Image 1 (cartoon, rainbow, N blue to C red):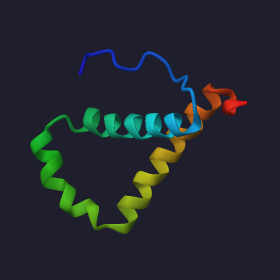
Image 2: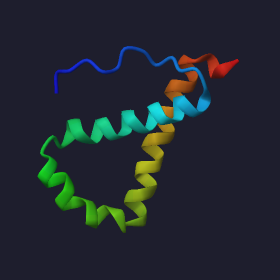
Image 3: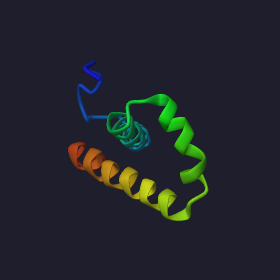
Image 4: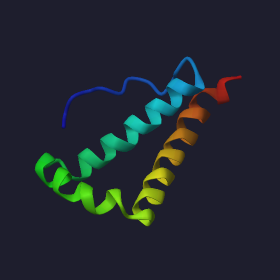
Length: 75
């Protein structure tokens, strides 16, 4: 993936920041496993695995912390 899609971490609202954090997390998975067929094949395994879902939530939370800090916590 060589397209430039992330030009800034600045968002207008915390909600937009959270959505950006989710996008960052999903893009990270796509960069790690660029084969869409493999991603879809694995989805049933992790979609019902509590540990995998918690780990995914942790990644989103970490990305949200980064976006929030970049936005001076929307102060």
